[in-house]
Image (cartoon, rainbow, N blue to C red; front, top):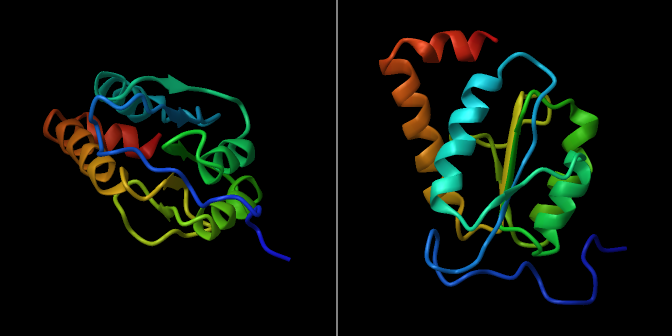
Amino acid sequence: MSTRSTGPRISRTASPFSASPWVLLIGTPFANNHYLNIRYYFRFTQLSHGIRRAGSAALDLCSVAAGRFEAFWELKLNPWDKAAGALMVTEAGGRVTDLLGRPFDLHGDEIFASNGLVHDRMRQVFTEVLGEAARTGEGEKARKD
């Protein structure tokens, strides 16, 4: 049995951060590390058509796999929240890593999944935001929370 439907693989927009009407998904963690997520949210709100919060990481990942959304990220998830969805995105032709582009770790704290096309540009934004937080001294506090 395949993880894909009989339909096409993930649909892709023309280019990352173009005028194309693509939308991102965000997860809001229960942990106290909201600082960085708010900074990520602010930056991507400026660069995308919009950001949605659906409420279930598993369903969000399946939505990326189905091509309904371009990407999803969340911090502080448990393995059972991301295991099946990460597989769905990968099987559909997308990419799954941590926020800095390192290989996906089921037991790690972060997940970043995309259709593949926007992945590298979004990873650059995650890196920029984390660097800005580090320069202002706020990054260390945010990573500890």
